[in-house]
Amino acid sequence: MQRIAALLSLVTLLGVSPIQLDSQMVLQRYELEMGDLRSPKAMIFSYTVSQAGPSDIEQRHRIYRSGLDVRDETIAVDGAALKPKIVRIGKREDRYDVLRIAPRTANYTMLFVRAVRDGGHVDYEYEASPLVAQSAGFMVERLTIDGETYLPRVIGFRTTGASARGAGKLEYAKIGAYCVPVAVSVDAEVNGKPAREHIAWGDYRFPPSLPASTFVAPKPLPHATLPPI
Image 1 (cartoon, rainbow, N blue to C red):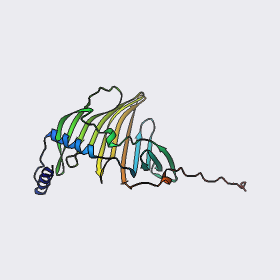
Image 2 (image 1 turned 60 degrees about the vertical axis):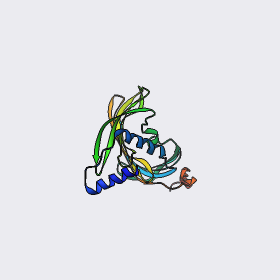
Image 3 (image 1 turned 180 degrees about the horizontal axis):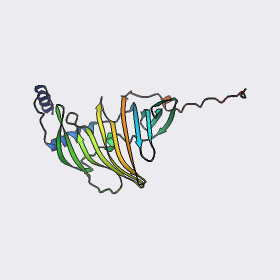
Image 4 (image 1 turned 120 degrees about the vertical axis):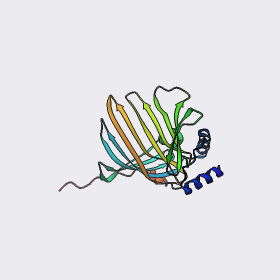
């Protein structure tokens, strides 16, 4: 693997077309990298969410996460900063964690589709089919493996529920030691009406830990004790 990395670096420096690796070799490297990957113990990031459809939303949030503990601060709505910001404290799993979403060869069949040049390297796109048939819920349909990190770059999916169904793609990037989401776009139908959603993440930080006070709800402001004049 070190010889391959050195060769690819030399090819990039010389300005020659990058080498395309065997698709099965790429999958093997992907499985090795995914096996070594870990989720952050703690992280701070921001995201913007835009929805259009049955309800229109434009919000910006800042998130503090440690395990299942989450502090969610809504800091802007419709482009206007909130003062004071809205703070919600709770426990929930990270539904965009790449280790939860990315398909693996143990539960998906992956058929090589094409190689796509991306700057000085090649990315590899696969069609993903679950080994156990699914009629509802979240299902991955496409996977693009980054030819530099051998981690997911784009995950195409569809989702089906009782009142909604849609399809979209999740984009990931390696930041530091972690593979984190950077964007998701979904076209959906909710109760028979079209809807769209786009989320963009950024400003990632990965502290060793977060203080326990981060996940304590702020105290409400005291009420006035004097009668109005």
